[in-house]
Length: 325
Image (cartoon, rainbow, N blue to C red; front, side, top):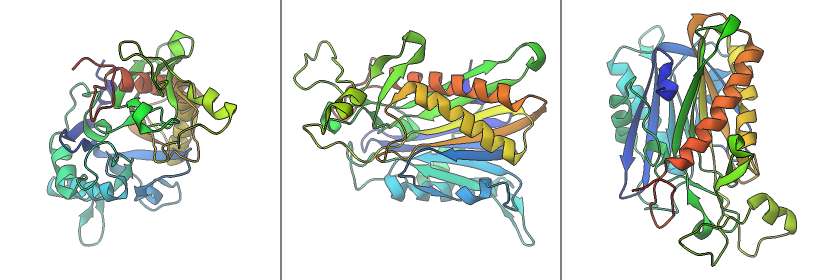
């Protein structure tokens, strides 16, 4: 299993700055892909999002860029656009090909250097590194500065990161692949649906032993009343689900909407006023499949990708991660 790159024609590349603890991830769609999205959070930061609307004149997207750096990180999308232009990719206009590059950002300024963010050059480097090999996971790319479980503040949080997972369907849908990539930078905790919903990474109890992590349970803290510490308000989980089934723009948007159930299973609480969560969907192929079946599979692979994103994340900036260094 390679993750998102199990979809033929989709390549993933990272640019990582471990000193500033930030980076970006470029998801390239060779020849373009049908795209859609679903916004569940309340604090998004994006560019070119309207191109995914079914009513927009562009019929496909050429890249999705996920970046740290808050709004400053939107500049990384320009680098990916420049890279794709040099390769002859883009939407044909009367005078030139214009690559359609959708960009979404997350907030990581508080963990590393707030004055160093992904730039146009960072995006170009991520695009140049894109390949169809197994997706590199953990504290890389847009997940370098990602953190999870911030109801008690960043000091009690844990590291998030990049995770990816795929599945190949059987029966009447034999040969159809559904895959996901997640960058988890959530306000809430990450829970493993495959382990009865147990918390995997999240807000840690103050004063707990360093040798054994004790979780505060973010949802329980919120429901018990205002936390004793100010919650960390800048959070976002970014996700991309993709399939080799042929979809329309409307169906791609429905795939993204159904996939967000995977976020609900793996993050608690999710879609808060402190989160800018977005799920993007890509259709790259000609296989025929039922959107309801594909959507159910997308939710499953996204939940698994989110769990992998924290299991593979290492300690950075004093924030503990689950992966061994």
